[in-house]
Amino acid sequence: MSDEDLGTAGVPARIRDYLATRLPQARDLVLDNLQRIAVGWSHETWLFDARWREDGGIRTLGLCLRRDPGNALLRELSDLGEQFRVLQCLEATPLPTPRPYWYESDTAILGRPFLVMEKVPGTCPSPWGRDGRAYYAAAAARGVLPESFTDTLATLHTLDWRAAGLEFLGVPAPGTDFAQREIAKWRAFIEQTDAPPDPLLTDLVCWLEANAPATTRLSLVHGAYRTGNLLLDGDRISAVLDWELQVIGDPLYDVAYVLSDLNREGSELLSNLVARETFFERYEAATGITIDEDVCRYYHLLYAMRSAAFWLSASDLYARGASGDLRLARTAWSVPVVLERAARELGY
Amino acid sequence: MEHADLIERIAGTLRHEVGPAVTDEYARTQAYMAAVVLGKLAAEMRASAADAAANAADLDALFADLATFAAREPLPRALTGALESAARERSDAHLSRLVEQLYAAREALGAARFDALLGRVRETLRARLERALAYSA
Image (cartoon, rainbow over all chains, first blue to last red; front, side, top):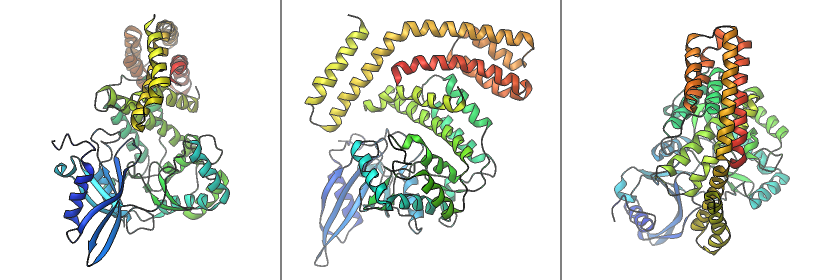
């Protein structure tokens, strides 16, 4: 089997062999509780506990491995090397994130680049299903997690990203540069597909370009801060996950995502968790940032463009034969739904 | 049997017979997703002839109205070119180009004319979107 052909069947044995090279002191190294967690939209994720003998005792280390499957949505935008670097930068900050251990670009090891990081204790209930919604409703009633959700976003937006070494993500110039960079990024993403130009999407992009808000404050922006991308240990956020869309930019870009009704299916609570008033009061008090709802409305439209770019790219992956996952083919019919939302926001 | 009907029946078989019999979670999801995709394809195929006719009629009306706008007061040269191309070619690419040129000419047009012209284009885009939503949503 060539490295390129290495599917998922041979991965566990190769992971063990790889760890043996990284932990040369480990004797009788085995992987316990190995599981490939729910097939995601981007990178493959494997969880396991490495167990070995050392100095007469038994050592264990919970690990999470993310492997580039080679045909993932967002692959061009977020390589694992960058994710690893971001996690390294965040390790010394107060933001809860998994500790990064190793990144390997050498495809001879697992067939594709991969990173290994700490397996942080906790669960990550999906907010889209009935069980997940019930989980977050109960957590909202207890009241601790909504505060933790808000405080963690405030921590993210107030951390010293320059001191953390995150300038490599690119620093927008003062003014409208942040929004224009995001528009250009998603425009390029759309243009990489074989999809014909859509006049309604063109209208949206032109409107966004013509109405870009000036950014008055820069922070680290997660890009998809919501329940489902946060690991929870009881009522505490144990780790912020999914570092695939992060940028240096306007913190209100994240705030708009939290405020979006896209992220609160069947609930009045933001992200199915936080009362709007609570979020505003607590976030503004913790950050000193005033939430400008007009700017957030602008970012909702930018998210509509981003969603259209995701879905066009996803369906294109299937159409080109780069992926056999029919969930991607289905997204072709999600584009009109996203554009309808945008058209309504634009007043038509 | 019409192709759309056949595809819809296949979708039903995948949804009600194949999917429930598949034990592997990923494969079962794929079976259900195939049913969803085929169902949407069937609905799109059924609507395609009527939608194409409605879209063509909408474009006829749009370009007639835009020509009336242009006759009242000349449009900037680049916008005129984009309008003529769009009226002639009737493609999404040309309609997109027309939208881009509208925004590019925004200052020259002034707010009122820009809003009127774009509003008229959006009327057509909204009608087309509604038709697409009938099988997309």
